[in-house]
Image 1: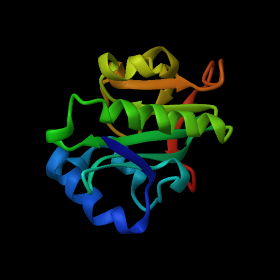
Image 2 (image 1 turned 90 degrees about the horizontal axis):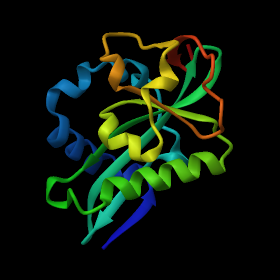
Image 3 (image 1 turned 180 degrees about the vertical axis):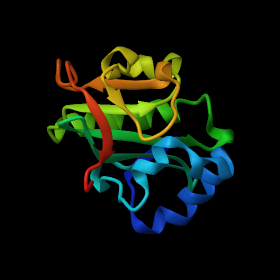
Length: 163
């Protein structure tokens, strides 16, 4: 059994170990990392999964400008390999999206596998007018309209909110 909690400062070392184990050194060179550098995740939307007294999963969301609109950037999502295929990632995704919608957020974007993220409402069709600050496989650049039509017609660069 897992428990989902809002990320707290004391979770940081365990989160970093999980992300290193999940993505390795390459995580620091990914296009989406350019949007996260120097930024803080949205505290109320960034979650950890705890199981048997250990941190076994994490998801973070970040506020970005998507064209002329504000959106959330989801990622990374990581689950300890010994807990994969047990619904931990899905639980983190559902809760993060539920909280985001409850806070009045309108859209979430990410780079990931549509076969996985599609079941949570993400599609490449919603991001066709948006551009990330680096290379990306367009079929993996996905969006989820928490409010119907919130990404319709949106065009421009995705940038950190402070930019």
